[in-house]
Each structure stands twice: as structure tokens, then as C-alpha cells.
Amino acid sequence: MIHLDLSLQRLPADTKRLLLGYSGGMDSSVLMHALTGFTSRYNIQLWHINHGLQKNAAEMEQFARNQALHFGLQFRVDRLHMDASLGNLEARAREKRYQLFEQALQPGDVLLTAHHQNDQAETLLLNLMRGSGSAGLRAIARQRALGEGLLFRPLLEISRNEIERYALVHRLDWIDDQSNNSLDFDRNYLRHQVLPKILQRWPSAIQQFQRVSELQSETEQLLLDLATLDYAQSVHYKPWTRNACLSVAALTALTGVRQKNLIRYWIKHHNLPVIGFHKLEQLVGQLESKEDAAPCIEGSGFRIRRYQKFLYLLTHRPDPELAASYEMPPVSQLEIAQIGFSQTRSDVFAYLRRADQGQRVTFRFRQENGAITPGLHTHRLKRLFQTHQIPPWIRCSIPQIFLDDELVTLWLL
Image (cartoon, rainbow, N blue to C red; front, top):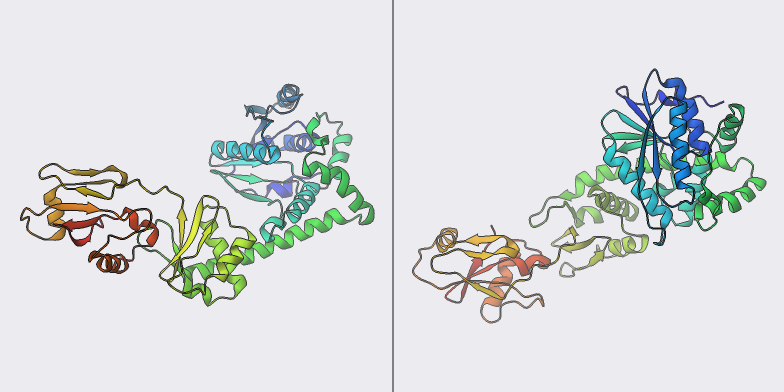
């Protein structure tokens, strides 16, 4: 028998509404039936997602609607209309589904899903085959924040066998998702081909996988706690970037494994996908490089670069397309829209703290090929960039102020 009372006691005291992610399959039908004993405590709604992928998608939606009507529960349906011809279908469907959940949940909402011990075992094995670390091997979390609400999985300690017994004892109806039988999906292959053979040899494997997940969850929490402490000692906020930087000196004072743990935390702290194992190894190996070296590690939508003893986390933005020089007009404003520049002659001379004696005012830019203004200005320009700690990758967008062809300073407002 499945008892939800103890599991639901873990919910926040201000929980107002339970939304069950309801496919119409056996697992979610069992959880729906068990929840009917709590309608006096919570506002309960069935939430069906029609991905438009299964041949019987319309039938599944109608079944879900009928079940909500039969048990006197509120009902919501969303249709995603996904393209089955595109690759990585299983992952894309999950991503779309959870994006929808995240956007819709309100404070006091708890989204329930019917994931159970066997799902936990499948997820752990899938992540193991992908080479995941402790974060992946903890598999499915019992609960986590989602949007303004909470995602909660009350059946995570219940096996599929127990769920099947409950469904038969209570003579429940459900509808099968035909895609669950397709071995084209990795999860289905594990479910139908791999796990049965494992259980023949090791009958308690499902429970042991659950224990591994719980231990990895504890390990991940310890790593998070350690990274939080290391981050506080290593983080710096530097000019010319919105993201926090890491001190190379603080990093190199740590052991190699703590360096990698801290870098992962730093990236995730900025809501970016963590770089892979080999790139992380490459980055750690470059921490001891000379100061004039400029290592660059590419991530998904960002890059990590080093400048003056700090690591910078840079989100990809195209360099502005700028001309080599712009001449200040005598009366009107000079507009350089690509960098948000809009100033008059009087603004410029006020910035320079000089008198306007009719000099020719020119704003010049370092070109994309990295060439610095040639001639006598080369060394002065380099010193100005270094004095103001301007990283090399943004120097091409920093205006250089020239009076009568003499480099005076940089425009830094």
C-alpha cells in the first residue's frame, strides 16, 4: 500500500495547490488515486501535457480529462506541438515540458510527478553511461525549486512493483504511452533490455541504486558547501565585466580537485552550463601559465579568459563594427551608436579638463586585427590600457581621444 501522508508532510506549510503532472499512465494514475484522500487539505489539479508526438495523443488527452471529471479534480491541458523529425526528441520534450511548468507555477504551488525507484535507477544508469559526476549520479532529486513554486516527487522510494500492486488492488484504469515500448529511446532500452537482466542477477539492485543516489546527493551537498567557502575567498568584481571573476592566486592555493569544484560552482552560479571534463582539465592546467599568456576556454554560450591574475567569465557578444576613426563635429554631437557614445565638443573638453582652443578632436579605435595605432602613440596606448586594467578582448571598443593627431587619453565613461 502506498501511503502519502508522511511524504506530503515534507511540503512547505504554505502549500496551497498540488498540480499533478498527469500522463494517464499507470504511475501517474496511482499517484492521482492516492491524492484523492487529500482533497480536503489541498486544491488538487491534474495537468496533462500533450506533446503531439504519440499516435494516440488525442486519446490520451481525452482519457486524462475523463479521469479528472470522474474523481472530481480540476484539469488543465497544454499542447506543445513538437516536431518529431528533429533529433534528441526525449530530451527536447522534457525541456519544453519543464519550461512550461516553471513559467506557470505560482507561490504556494507544488508540482508533483510520479517518478519512482525504478525511474531513479534508470536515470542513474543513463547518467553513468554519459560519464556524469556526483551531480548526475544523484539522479532524480526528491524536491527542488521550480519557478515560483516547488517540484516534489512523493513516490521516489516506491518501486514499480509496489505501484503495479496498488493499481491492481484498486482496479485502476490507465492508458499506455505507445512510445514507452520503443527501444529507440535510451531509457526504454534500459528499462526493457538492461534492468531485467541486472535484476535476475542482483534482485535488490533497484534499492541499491537508490542508496547510491542518496549517497551521491550527500556528496554533492558537501561539494557545494566547500565550493561556497572557496568562492567567498576567491571571488572579485572587476571593471569591464558584469560577471564575478576568480583570483588565480586563490585558485592555485587549492588542490586540483578543489580548483575544479570551485570553477564548476562559479560557472553554475552564473546560470551557465558547466564545461566538460577535458576542457576543465585544460583550464586548470593553464592556471600556472605566464601572466602574458592569454588562455581561452570555450563553453556553451560563453568563454573563460585570464587577464592580470584573474579568470573572467565572458558571455558571447559580437564585437561592435566600428570605423578606424570618427571626427568630432564643431557644433553638433558625435554619435557612435554601436557603443552608446553621444557627446559634444564641450562634453569632451570637460572630460579632459582642458580648454577648447579649436583643436581637431578625433576618436580612434583599435581594429579587429589587434593592431595598435602605429608610430609614437603605440607605447602610450599600451600603457593606458594596462593602467586602466582594460582586458585585451574589449580594447577594440574603447575610444582613444586624439587632439590634433596626438593621443591624449581614453574615453572611459
